Length: 224
Image: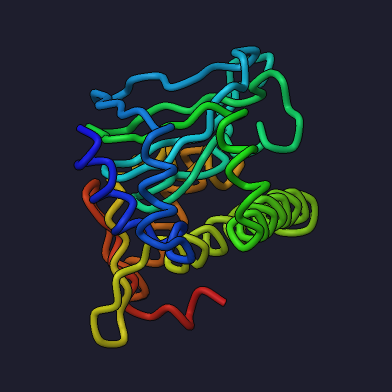
């Protein structure tokens, strides 16, 4: 298992600044989790005592309003870190992390990881930048909710998904996330009906091709 974790670290971009010996040192502190589809990793008010590295699969970060509406903050793919706010002093989780498919996840105790960061300033800087980037994205989404119409938010979301998950195919971009219309609505803070109408219009205009398995964006510039 430890050799398997080391191989994961060798292929984990976030840890690219570490030497093989440093990765071996971190490996000693890391455990491995194999999660089934729709398995909860943590819930609001759970102890924020670990940081997670996603090697395989997808993980959804979300929360629910008092009236039961889901807001999806991010859908993470292989090579991404989550639960990182524990580093900032967060003692309890504020969101839900759950898999959307089979996933393989490495995780490390927060105290062990903080000690490791203290002796590896380049990695510590990467974590700080990541936290800042994600907070900026949350702020950007809040601004969209105030200043953009619902169809515009759907288009902006597609641009975000291209940036984060898009696979380049010539001038086109493919997003493979198995998203339902409700998932897209929860990501864009709108209704399923608005998503359906907007996607149908984009498909009719030749901007996208959509099915449950993927979104093929044929004309990315048309989303701006």
